[in-house]
Image (cartoon, rainbow, N blue to C red; front, side, top):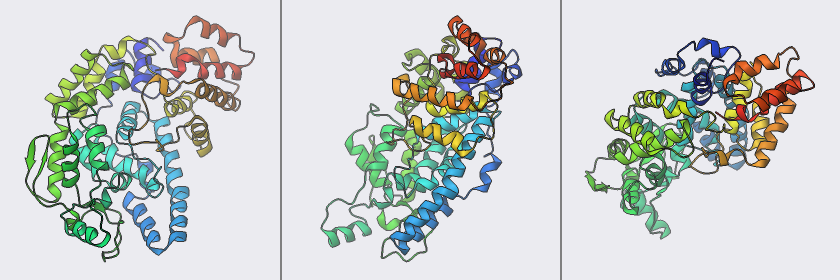
Length: 453
């Protein structure tokens, strides 16, 4: 590896160096990253897996049949769909020649977290990522926001399928039947404002949450059937006009006329272009690519590009690559457990990782894919990943992993190839003194330099 910029390109913007990959960057690491900022087709391997609509329809048909049928269908969906696709996803990231694009898939998927903490929707989450996230990582943020907010996985995860306007036909019926006064569910509206667009300090009020929640009443999917609904079950988005709160809605001081399904889309478009959204997203992106404590100048630079481009994520991504701060401080960021496992497999050329190769270490470390404990997703600071216990579990896994590596590897050559410019003298001496080549590889992969980016 020639220089620190090559290390940054492969680790901070990529997912870790594969054997010999540093040579392919030549003298232009930044150009190598920028060349990946194009619309990528969904990898062909995912075409073998069911769509979210198929998964959701099967589970909800089973739900209507009874609790035993639901348990069976959900379990089958996890075993036959979810787990194989999670492994396929890891293999794609391990073997990708466009790791910056894959990193952006991870970033935006985490930003728009849907978690299998809600078991009934869990099997559809990998499909949600490839349907609503992947096509838009270098497109317009507004398009991704709309695709995510209307995806049945998100609608189910944040309970919008059950949200009824109090003055809607369904809401009036529910109040009369149950005596309840509250039919509106604010979960999706709140997270759109707090986590997906403006941010918690973005200037919205509780009244804005309520008004947005009213505007998206009726956003549901075809698996959420009430007893009086006679339509066939399906797993696609469905607008239920009889759930929709009638009348105009006012969000952030702007009034949107009654327009059914379109109301929510118009509001999302405006939220995507709001200055607070530009600042919030820029802060998260700079935190991810530069440092845990983002500098104001770097955030302002990215927010400005976001605003000027109308939320064009390709232009924003190029601006990130152009940030001098992103190339200045080596090892400023810590790899998450998922990034670490992917990086280890990339470093050792293990492209055909099996389920246990991926899922067992992630289970031990506490970051199974799509299992964040809240809609806020996984954290993005060092404190989230290198507590003493978590660090010990990484080291324990590495010793088990390297025990199965080929003894023909040259550890010192691997050290220079993977991260030579950032290796300190103490690490190099420790690797040189290792009793066996496998022990030396374990020391390389467990080193502080390898665990950072």
